[in-house]
Image (cartoon, rainbow, N blue to C red; front, side):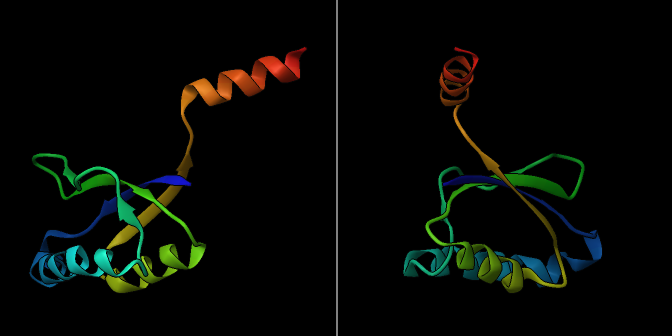
Length: 94
């Protein structure tokens, strides 16, 4: 399933978070963490952004969260393609 993961942190924590981010790039290759479907995006002028991930096992989300804890706030939301929603909606509607 695909998820969008929003992140936010304090500027004071960047020196701690950047090495964790660089390590996470390597950890994703192990299969124990969510797979990035997109690059990690950053909102200029602010310390937040998002990444879209493919998650095979909910444990991957827990492990990802714990990797950054407590330095970064993460919010995970499942996402689906709009066409899948429309198809289900129309089927339910009859």
